[in-house]
Amino acid sequence: MNCSQARQQLPGYLDGAIRATDHVRLRQHLASCDPCRRQLDGYRRMAAHLAQIEPVPAPADLAVRIRLRASREESFWAGAIRWWSGAMIVSRNLIQPLAVPATGGVLTALAVFALLVHGMLTGVPMGGTVPNDLPLNLVQPAQLESLAPFPLPSLVEADGKSSSGPLLVEATLNAEGEVVDCRILSGPNNRAVQHQIDELLLFSRFRPKLNFGRPMDGGRVLLSFSGVNVRG
Image (tube, rainbow, N blue to C red; front, side, top):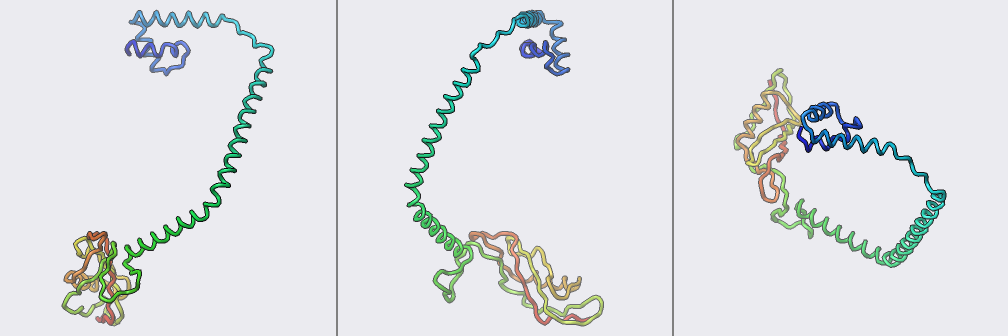
């Protein structure tokens, strides 16, 4: 501990208001520092002199003066509150006739903006469907471009049972249009079926999800196969 740190803690050393560790370090510093010991003695003498000073009695009319000052402050704030209330009433009377048209204009602008954003994001044309029109929406979902040229082979169950039915598959794509995950939502579901679906999707072509024209990860495509035979 240096002298600057010690002098900041001298008043607390006398009053016992510093931590025990700081008290020990300060006592070790005082044992070898004469200037800090002299300043500590000065604090002790000042504390002794202050302890000998008798308290000064309060003036007899102190309570009356406090009440008088409080009443003046109260009257000032009461006038300010009355002035503020009057100003608010005047401003409300001036602004209220204009509030309804302004609110209607703001709501109309928000409605038009919402319709424009909805048209851009979803690709719904405002004037009806145009034949052979290309979507101009900014966010386009992933989609299947071409399925594998070979037919889906018969799907074989492990338990040897025979059945048939539709098969619903969800494929998750990356930004390159490659299938990174495949999940059978309904229909035959076993390891052989999953393997054949993986082979079919591997040779299929997909377009990834587009966000402002940029390919994005996480696009999903639903594929439905009807009349899939499951035989053993």
